[in-house]
Amino acid sequence: IAGITQAPTSQILAAGRRMTLRCTQDMRHNAMYWYRQDLGLGLRLIHYSNTAGTTGKGEVPDGYSVSRANTDDFPLTLASAVPSQTSVYFCASSEKAGVGDTQYFGPGTRLTVL
Amino acid sequence: GQNIDQPTEMTATEGAIVQINCTYQTSGFNGLFWYQQHAGEAPTFLSYNVLDGLEEKGRFSSFLSRSKGYSYLLLKELQMKDSASYLCAVMDSNYQLIWGAGTKLIIKP
Image (cartoon, rainbow over all chains, first blue to last red):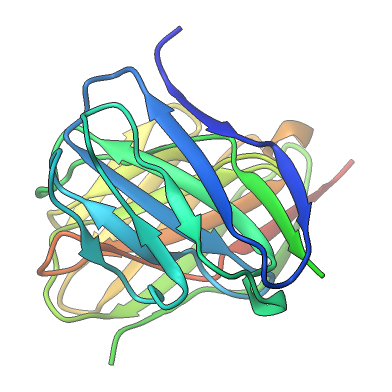
């Protein structure tokens, strides 16, 4: 079934630990995105990648890093987790980064940092 | 700065019509999206407007006025399954989506 998968579904993490959230899509989309969603706030872009081999910073990149070694995978790493990174994380993809291009979302990862 | 405003919460009755408004101020405009998000789930695409006017898709319609920085999502013949949050997002000059905080729609029988 075509779509986006994320792992893990949820995670509780001690502050200071390193964590990688995984995202894989099988739609051969060029562009991929990582968002965080917090209560009362809109989705906020963390990092994005317009094509394999390139990445860019979004609105809230501090404390996060990404890589895009191939078309399908776009992992998000928290080098040293802090409680303010407690959130729901969504990965999304679109065919390209252009006018009218629709973004499709994965099921999300609920992360709690204690 | 960039800003997307939409009401926090609305309540409507099953079978009725509801209009969810969205106003925006962004650096550039490459279209406006509406997404639906059920509690605990991912956002799913509903509609896209880039030209002024009304786009109809079944029970859902979306309207855009670029000169007023305004859009609305119209839901007709409301069903209980329409209880969800509705997210307004504008694509800016860098082709990034700027998101509103969402409108939680509560449907009562």
